Length: 228
Ligand SMILES: [Cu+2]
Image (cartoon, rainbow, N blue to C red; front, side):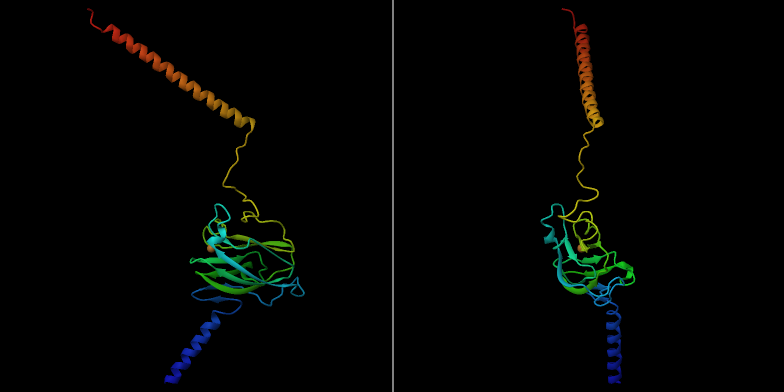
């Protein structure tokens, strides 16, 4: 009976571990790996052109050099050759949850075109991604609410990329800036001048009315003074 129970527990544990660690997937209480690819070569590649080991750290301290930002990766851009393999060591230096997501990958290799690492707090994960040959810039970011907007946004350029993505800290400007420059057009100047003239006119009218009311008050008071 005891042996039977041990056997059942062993089978359950093996099945559970297998279910949570297949097809490039891993999930446990510390975090998650989704769509890791160590050996599946994209259709447009004949072989892996280069293998790069890279450590990417996430944390609030990496945002300190970017005014107005709160979170960041320690690297904002990675350049690789077409058909390169990236062995990523992802380290979260914060005590809060962070993700490392790469988007726009081919869907036949990566479900929903996505490579996804996630750590629920401080910790480390290792996973790999193989890029196609296309000259392209991939978004790498943390998708938790406001983390990308607050700076956790980087880019990976394959074959030099097809341009910079917007609002990469230290690299590119946002599409919609927090600071809006004044458009000093003739219309703007005319509206400002008109507003100033209107303001002066209102002040003069009010002062004029106040003087008239004061004079009327004096006159009324002088008329009601008792005659000696
Ligand atoms: Cu994050």
